Image 1 (cartoon, rainbow, N blue to C red):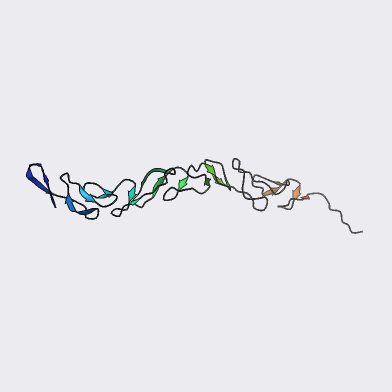
Image 2: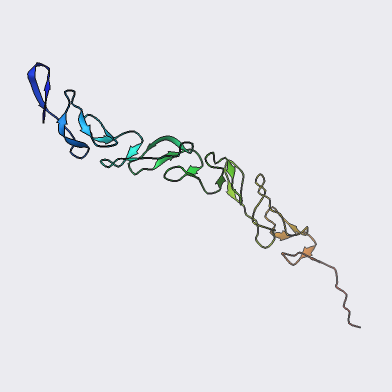
Length: 173
C-alpha cells in the first residue's frame, strides 16, 4: 500500500509480511504489528521477547538474570554462578538461588566451590567442611584432610585399628 507524505507525495509502506497484520501503514510509516512485534515495518520482537515472527516472552528469572532480555533462542544472560535458559537455578556446586552465594552440600571453598574429595572408605560421609574441605574421618586412627590413610603406628585401612610392631598374644597353650 501507499502512504501520503506532505505535499501530496506517495511512498510505499514497507511492512514486513511476517511481522505485520497487513500492508497498510499510518502517515508516519508505522505498520500494524502482530502481537509482541515492533518497529515501523514490524520487523523485530519487542524487548524481552524472542523468536520473530512468533515472538514469545523471554521469561528470564527476575533476580537470577542480568537483565530481562534474551538471545534469539530464548536464553537469558545469567548472574555469576547462576545457570539455566531462564537463569532459574544455581550452577553445579552452588546453592541458595537466586543469589547462588553458597557452596552446596558436598562442595567447599566459596566463591570457587570445589567438590569434596572425601575418601568413601575412610570418612563418615562424603560431605566436607564448607570452609576447609576437610572430611570427618571414620575414627581417630584415620588421618588426612580426605581421610585417606591410617595414623602412624596403625594399619588396616580403613579401620586402622592394629598397631605396627606389637605382637598379638596367642591364646594357644
